[in-house]
Image 1 (cartoon, rainbow, N blue to C red):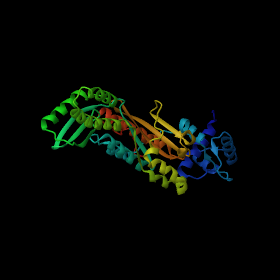
Image 2: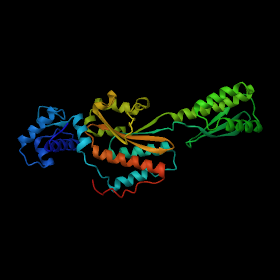
Image 3: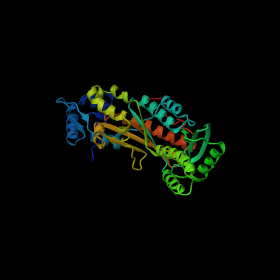
Image 4: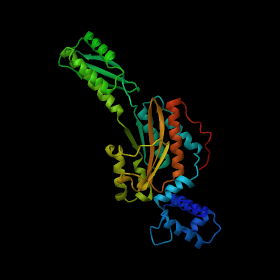
Amino acid sequence: MELSDRKKRILRAIVETYIATAEPVGSKAVAERAGLDVSSATIRNEMADLTDLGLLEQPHTSAGRIPSPAGYRLYVNELMDQHQLTLQETERINQALNLKMEELDRVIDRAGKVLSQISDYPVFTMAEAKTRITVKRFDLLMVEENAFIAVVMTDNSVVKNKLIRMPDTLSDTQLQLLSAVLNSSFVGLTQEEMEQTLDKMEARTAPAAFELISLVVDFAVEVLADQSQKKIHTSGITHLLEHPEYHSLDKAKPLMTYLAEDQEASRLPVAMSGKNMNILIGPENVSDALKDTSVVMASYDIGDNMRGVIGVVGPTRMDYAKVTARLSYFADSLTRMFGKGELPSGEDSEDKE
């Protein structure tokens, strides 16, 4: 869609004014923001043309206009300036991410909470596991004569343990032999490969010994299955209530419920189609619960064939320039932290809004 320079300036002024005020924008406000030296009548005619093109909507009989999803899309694609993060924002983000030694889930969850506080929108974060996850090591610790703790460490540094009780007693020697079998036969295998190895082992292993091996291997399979699942964390859902679009609880509740329930949140649109940044505006979202919202997502690289997505959910009247700048910085920071062990310096940021 090819627009004249004046129409672009008017559309940009309306989008940015509506983002700031949440009120329909009239010709006078457009003239002031766009700096156009033309009459109000000319601006109104241009606004009418933009409405006919489907880029603006007129919610009431007044002359004020608001952007349509197509208007937001054109703004995001062609008219939006790059937003510079303030020094305070970069410092706060770096503090949140400077937890490299903590478990991955905790780092990403904390990053989402801080981004939600900075942006005043709900945020979701997702770490997608490696395509191949295996057990790196088994450790067995005797607790009682008929109970031991099985410790499973995966190759992505996750450690899980479980108390296993047995009907019969078990000696230290038997426990050492069990540990030797597990570490020689089941280390470096995926969930499916472990199950196949266990099936083959049944025919050539004494029943009592096979029962013990099965108990530990079944636990290891559960650990690997859990690690291979896509985990989504959501933060700051109540921030929705701070925006005029969601002052009505009837309108806010369905979206808040969608974001709060794990089963629903797992259907958030995290596919990136090879892009580092993706913006879905209004009806571009497939889910009915998101049809009146925008979702902005950025991907990051965790290393070891792992990737993640961090996203912001909010009204279509979202400050896309600020949101994309913050998301881009977060994603770049996460990539540097997990891949290179460093954080961006923030030297390119300016101490300004």
